[in-house]
Structures are given as C-alpha cells and as structure tokens.
Image (cartoon, rainbow, N blue to C red; front, side, top):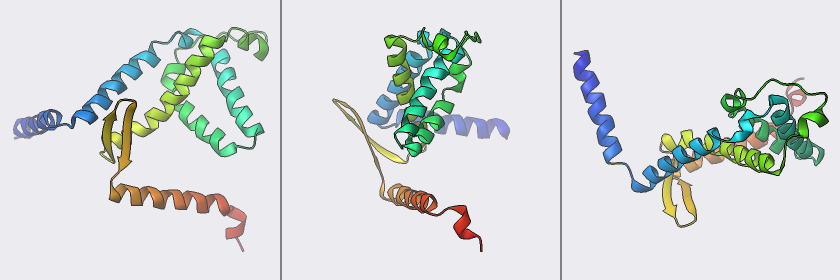
Length: 173
C-alpha cells in the first residue's frame, strides 16, 4: 500500500515537472545559477566581524537617514544569509576599523549582490507555491499576482500599514 502511494506521488511529481511552464523552469534554472554564484563568492572566507560590520553599517546608514522600515527589512533579508555567514572565519581584529580595512570594493559589490540575493530568497517560496504568473523577458523575469493572491497581498499590506500607524499604547485603556 505504502509503495503504491509512493509511486503515485513520484509519478505526479514527474508529471508536474514535465508540464512545468517554460518561464517557471527558466526562473528555477536561474535560481540554481544564482545560488551557486553567491555560495561560491570569496567574501564568505573573510572574518565574520568584517562582513557583519560592513553589512550593519548599511543598516545603520538607513536608520540614520530615517528609513528604519527599510533597515528592518534589510536585517530580515540578512537573516537568510546565515548559512553563508557561518562559513566566515571568527578572527576578531583589533577594532571595527581594523575589521573593515580588509573589505574592499569587490567585497562591497559582492555583499550588495548578497543583499539582493536575500530579497530573491524571500520571493522564491511564493513562486514555488504558484502565487505568481511568470513571464520570461529579454531583461529578466516579470512576476505578477493572480487575482486571488493580489487581493491577499493588498490585505496584508493594509494590515501592515495599520499596525505601523497604531502603537500598542493606543490599544490599552
């Protein structure tokens, strides 16, 4: 019985792969390429303090400019990089300035790409759950919500905005 169910699931999965929309397959192929590119970057060989100092200076800059929401979003995206950050060395250095002294322009560019990768990683689960229609274009991919998911996204955005406008003190007598 269990083997029969397993064969049915395997056949269904194989059928889904063979029937996959070509644009969706191209996006998944692109995802594998990007995963490999980011995972193989030399920046993950630097000391953790150097990498985190550079990344959190960006977060600090956003906060200093009054963009705390974007800073919080960036921290969330950075959390998706934890498996890569765990590859970094644990050397401390004499100071934050010392730690940052080994982060050159190439490393900064790679960290910018890693931040974009974090955003991409936030998006892909929704792609895998078929929440988007995918079009492959010359310049990349276009993802659009179907009507049901668009409504859910708008509702989520409205709740988010209401929560920002309402602090916890206003809910207490």
